[in-house]
Length: 190
Ligand SMILES: Nc1ncnc2c1ncn2[C@@H]1O[C@H](COP(=O)(O)OP(=O)(O)O)[C@@H](O)[C@H]1O
Ligand SMILES: [Mg+2]
Image (cartoon, rainbow, N blue to C red; front, side, top):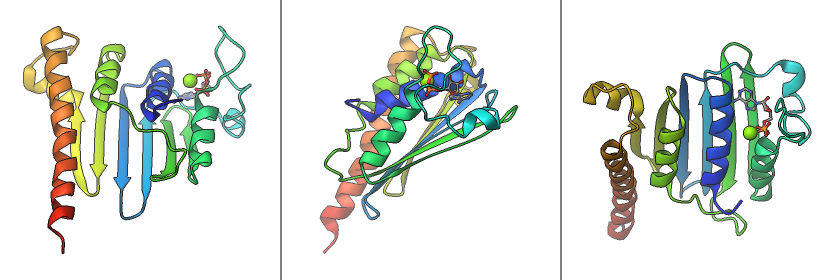
């Protein structure tokens, strides 16, 4: 896929299908370690052990609409093609955690993509499910949590044009901020 955000959207849709109440998305970018790590964790139905051991086999799917499930296998292939790794762990009735790690400056690493738009798409497609998004850019942290926002605004749903516009700005500005702090620090170091 052209952008890692497309993998993220795809894998969070698995969580929605698994009836998760909360999806946690953590992105860790480290220039020092030359790593980009994406973690998607949910409290959905989980995956039975006998299915989990070959889950990245493209023919493993519980979909009935088509015979192949490609989301996890493509994400694994992308990570491994970039000198990184893929991990999945799951407990039925508890939830699932997916990790993709990439060498940040690997020539084949796709760009992350526009995270503000990606978060917006998630919020619009998640229904009742909440999202906790944490983005760590060289130890500068940005957090976006739909439960907190719903409580603050005293609304049940964020699926309103005015709120969605605000979310896009909030995420876009928040990510810009953590990146600028880092760039300034680099600029000032001797
Ligand atoms: N977060 C999850 N919770 C529960 N089951 C999952 C989760 N992610 C994946 N699965 C199971 O693994 C299968 C393969 O997932 P994936 O590779 O994304 O392909 P697809 O979604 O097209 O089936 C899914 O059909 C589903 O049964
Ligand atoms: Mg899928």
